Structure formats: structure tokens, C-alpha cells
Length: 96
Image (cartoon, rainbow, N blue to C red):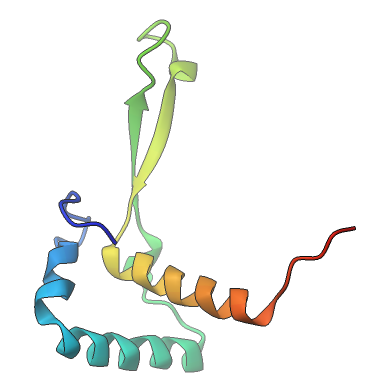
């Protein structure tokens, strides 16, 4: 993940995980394996903040001229990448 991102709702910057280096890898691996085995994601990870961003076109008063972005925990974004990687290894795309 790129650095310089905004702080996530739980207050952890992605740079935090980078600074920890191998310690973060070991800790996150244990955490992700525990989540995978238990089939339970921490409740805090289910929360996000939806922020409307103006598209810079049209009437600023019209809701249709905004798009939403979700501010989520960087840790869950890492978790999502792990799951995506596992799914991509297990599946293949075929033409119909």
C-alpha cells in the first residue's frame, strides 16, 4: 500500500506497519490466521466512514455530483489483499 495516506478511523497510519517491518509481518500473519480459522472478523473492522467527494462538475448542491469514498482501517485493507491473493491462486478465469 502507498504511504502518505490519511489516517484511518482507528488512528493507525500505514507507515506504522512499515516501520515495524518483520515484526509486523509476524504479528499480522498470526492475526490473519486466527481470523481465518475462527471465521470472525473484528467488529471494529466492519465500521467505516463514508465521505462524499465532489466530482468537480455540475451543481455542487446536487447529490448526484458526488461520489463516496470509504475510510477504513488499513489493517482490514491488508486483510482484504491477503484474501484476494488466496482467491486468485484458487480460481481461474475462462472464456465462455
